[in-house]
Amino acid sequence: MESVPVPAPRNQVLPDQPQAVRAALSSIREGTQDVDSGILINRVMEAWRRRTTGGSLDGPSVVLVGGFAGSGKSEFAKFLGGLTGWPILDKGSLTRPLVDQLLIALGGEAHDRSSELYREKVRPLEYRCRSKRVSVATIWVECDQDSMREYLEFRGAARDAWKLQAWDEYVAGLDMTLRPQGPHFVVDNRLGVAVALVDEAKDILSGGGL
Image 1 (cartoon, rainbow, N blue to C red):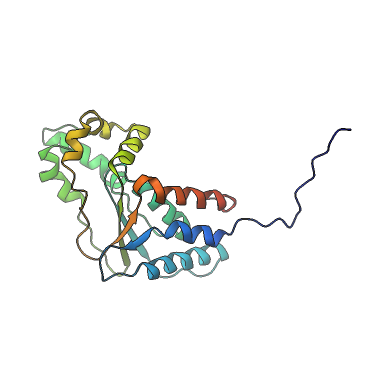
Image 2 (cartoon, helix red, strand yellow; image 1 turned 180 degrees about the vertical axis):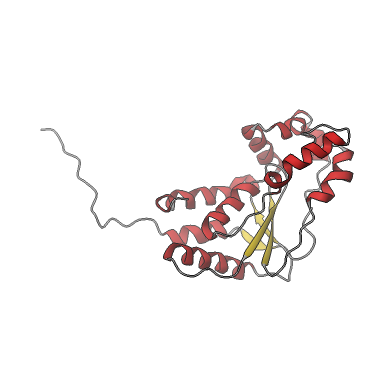
């Protein structure tokens, strides 16, 4: 006799979406004593709830997410933006065309992000940021060097070519204790843990379009 698969019951319990989201946000911790990760996490959860239930949105919020190349900052930032609808300022996307042309005009190469020319003449212009009448949260994503290299190899961007070719020289110039000036949060993505939690939450939320 041929067995017939039994359909899943209609009232099958789905994974707990709020729990998955909160777990993904749990990697956010205080980077300085003048911030509270619980407040930020609750604000993200509330913004997500309002967005999914059609409630009114709160005032504008800007999240600045930083980290070394390959740290996982873009993935974490996109997850926050997808949840809340808040603007995420991706410096690379916003400034790359201008930076490339400025480097060429100054006698450098378009994709160069490691020379003294870039560090002294161009990079300071990229990081000017002023906020007016908006709530701003700064997050630094920390990651281990092996995971960073693995991600750079995976994405294969032209701007990363020198980093990968001269990896030992590149990482020797990194200050892994670097943090933003002023109040900020830190996300621990060593070994890709934070991004793994984000991916898990996105899988559970896939029915919502994230």
